[in-house]
Image (cartoon, rainbow, N blue to C red):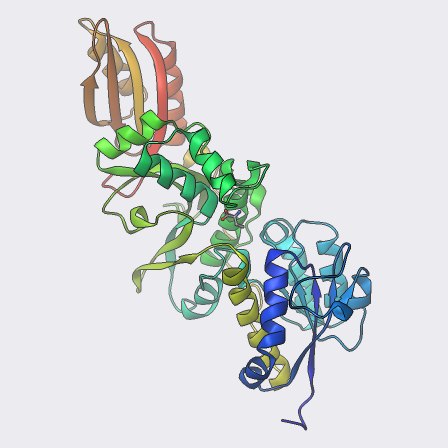
Length: 430
Ligand code: HSE
């Protein structure tokens, strides 16, 4: 191995994930070098301030990230600082200096992925990002490589551990949303400001990346329809449970009959028999349907230092192998260049929970509102006591446009006291 060129690595960022990547890289360097067919060396780590992390030699730290992206001796830059800037500028600078990049930065890829790919293509270097979606779960490489001979028609995923933890606690312990969120914060799953997770922004960035790969098209996060889980109540969860369903925050990407891409993030009711329904706590899973492969599911830990470091280091070894072989990995596959369908064109099913007056003719009036929008009713269930009744209506599939109009029409009816909740239903017959 002595005749082979050493491959030198620099890191941008050393938070929970970065520190784990650095520790594993330092402790496993002989093994990882053997797997890469070239000696690896971690040369520098850029941090914002302070340079001490347990198990990492303090002499590796610098507060000057440019000293990494402009260092001619560095071959691979690992970006685990997160955020758009300065990560974007630093990565572009590293690429233009001929360095391959391994990043875990989903927001950056979902916003500026096209620019990064174009720059990597021009410079003839690798851009790898297995850790950007679903942490430890190998999903990017299976989609880019293993499924390159197939046609993915649909992708559904639980790709945010915080919201899956919250929904699991609501389902299994009957907690209210705020109680479950407080538990997630106590356990360190949710940030002090949990907006990115609970409002679906984190999942939307991952949805853009997954849909882009699945359908060979550039998809950006602003093209993803997004709703979070803050409106889900304990009553909704109990109702779903009584119907043998669970509520999950899903990313969904699918091809429409017009061969456009529908891509969205929102809570859904899933039958408990669906493979994604059994994904509990902070675990992630991605479920794919492909023309020849059929149904596939990938499951594992979607966050945390160790799981995310595993994905980063897998990319480092892959990229190091390419450098050792004087080869290069895959370019962006965006040849299909499909349109993104407006959300109003998506076909979904709804569960609508209504408080209505309990008197003759009410059901007929409600049914008339459905008929007027051309929405077919699949099931109706009535409960409640006194002068009011609770109606739970599940529709057949219809366009989001018609379903949205229907909910507006129902809210405006005099006999409807309140539309309590509206949740989409997936994974059952249409
Ligand atoms: N905050 C994310 C989650 C992990 O809860 O899954 C990072 O993407």
